[in-house]
Length: 111
Image (cartoon, rainbow, N blue to C red; front, side, top):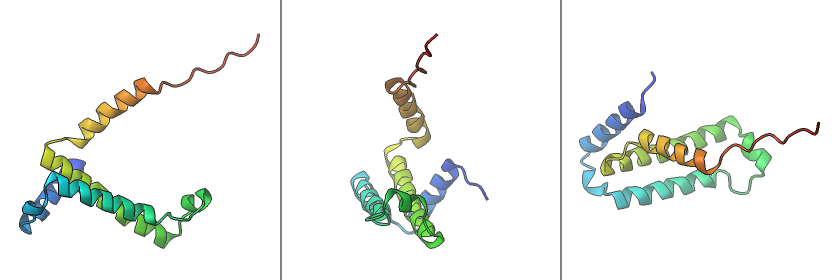
C-alpha cells in the first residue's frame, strides 16, 4: 500500500488525537523530538568509515530505516502544527537551491 505524504500526515494526526497527545505536541516540543531522533539516526553511523556507511548490513539498514521514519513523522507532525505543507516548502527550497547552485558549464575543449 502506497501512502501519499498527505495520507501519512492525516494518519499521524489521527494517531496522536486518539491518544490525546496534542497537549504535548507544541512546535517547540516537536522540534526538540525531531532533533533527538536525528541524533539517534546519526548514532548508527558513528565511527563508521564512508565505505561502511554505504554498505550497511540488512539489520543495520532496517534500524536506520526506523530512525529515518521517526524523523519523517516528527517533521510531518511539526508541519501540521505550523500549517506548513512540506512538499510545497521542499519545492520552494529546491528552486532556491537551483538558482544558488547552478550547474557548472562544461569546460570548452580546445579547438
